[in-house]
Image (cartoon, rainbow, N blue to C red; front, side):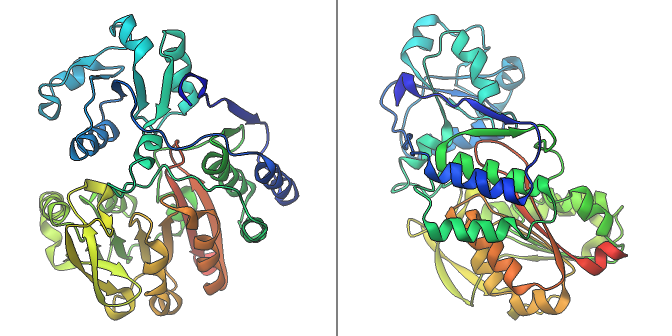
Length: 398
């Protein structure tokens, strides 16, 4: 760890066909895992003051872990932000050398490759640079944030499961992104494929989804947060839809969700349904860690119980379902199989919150849905932003 911690990019020209992808998977499986979660053992500095940096600040405050300051490419922009009141925000060139040499720098940027961010920082004297999620992983016993997970050694069962999923992706770009995802979580290696770029602006709405959309969709947003994806959906269908179901269990998020939809869609109230609950495999109550923004989730560390409903019990005629619930996606799918198999919706499911994303989550979807086309796309870096897309073949044909 410490100054020896580096993540060098691994570059390939072409997205792999199935045979090549399986060979590269075996390469990953044979490599030793060198990196572990990182505890804060020296003065801490955050790099990045946007939404990710704000999450990091709130996380550290909850755990009473102090940090010295924030570094950002556009410091003046964030110095005016009330959220950062009382925090020193430096430009990249402005940090004193002794801080660069003696501090732990946590990267809170996921829309740019880690290696691209850190190369100039190291040239400027930063010696100890890690992804913020590697720090969060060291405190999982105190906080549920889980994006920094390590897969550990891949078993033969893992390899067989991953190979099966690789064979069912529709295109080589999916296989390339799947391998990128595995390489990060297994080895902390950052893989690039020249003809399979990571796109950060089209999460949930890749071209294949946009081509399949109709003007009478019943959109179900499970883990609706503040309504951002619903706004994108509205733009994608040019405000033509049948119904929207926005499902969000965190009370603070739910309040902001309601305000967002009332502000942006005042004339659509009869077509929009807000449900303050969680979605799982069956109706019950589970401990829930609230107040974490988009990281709120089921957790034994939770302050309260939350009402859980199965999608199958809601009788929603869904035609497009998005699921982003911090690692509980398999549970939601399990409780919604009848709805999904009957209505045959477009399905977009996040896969990056736990080890299920390696193969068990996509296998669960693929094993129950006949005559669907499947894609895997990574929409950000640091092992995040991975989404499984399942599109009914009849939608593609239309």
